[in-house]
Image: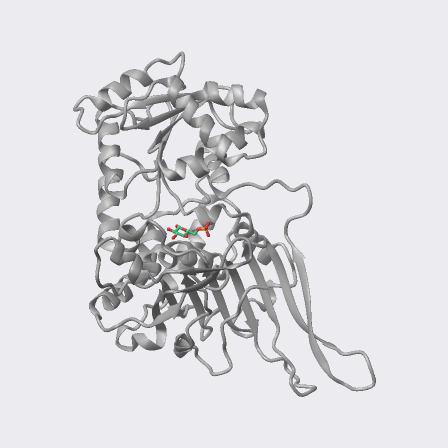
Length: 491
Ligand code: BG6
């Protein structure tokens, strides 16, 4: 149940809002999940009339829902939408926002702020809101959703946290990682703990290694400035992929309360062994895409330029920033002692796929030549499915086995398709932080990747290059623990 509330959306005319947030809120409204008295106050820099803003919002919905949408829901949704101009150089901007929100006939006083803005604006906005009393919780709840990235390394994350907690309690801060809103990722915990057949095998006695993969066919696009200062390790591994790892490897939470789940994730993230920088090449591999050919949406190939050429368009002539990053991690606890976790992500790969692949150890008896090890794959996207590979007898007179795949889609006809931002926005309004990050998780994640980022930034020797549209560079296999390990692709 959601209390009447006002969602104050900073950065409402930005890309995320256009593509995900507004359409997501519309779909929540259509599904009857928004309280009757819920208002969306979009905050932007420019002066825009309410009518013009509503026309803009309509354009966002038209662009997203090409097959049209329900007019009755639209009327209700558009009536929730208001706009507030917050010019950057107006010293009274936040006073005006406060005065506006004081109109209780229009704006419910429970306030959820969604900060879809530049990371450098997170703390200043919270400070301004605080100055005019807009994060005061003495009568109503006030929550602040902070977009990614939360800092760019451990010290900056801690500095941001210090700034925020001058004005907010921890319970008011919602640090988002949109991967936690993906239903296939939420399924990891359920697969593990709602079935009797997996948990007994989920340990170093039976598991050989785990691969957590996010491959994309897309390149960096027009985000060159952001990306070049960030790189694949910070962009994907520090956040989404370490969270995925935590869900795969954590111990069973006592219950499904946010506190219990977060406590287990924190314990797990803190148990990951620091990557030895003196032996970095055995534990981490980076590369950059060069020009190549990728699969276009229509199935045909498309020639694309390389990362350095994309940077050159912006006048940047050299860069060691990685568009491919692979790490080998170990978890120092009894369950996972000695099991490598390979985490990899890349732009401009031959296919886009996000998956958790688990290889089991050799069967206790090698009955026939060429018997394969079992794999269990939890595919996150684009397909949401569980696939088990088991050895099975080839029917006939000979005793020989082959691999049988049991492949089950998680999604059945008629199931709701919910975008991760939809479920996360709902959780924000409900006051359920289970799928949001605790500061200790963010800190543990930075603590782990910081030394690698530093070492990579300091090493200016040419970075390995892979052609756009290819598979993992051969050289990346140096991080494998044993020679019989290899990268898995989509299923
Ligand atoms: C974002 C990264 O956080 O996640 C992007 O900044 C990346 O670089 C994106 O493409 C991937 O998200 P998804 O949901 O498309 O897998």
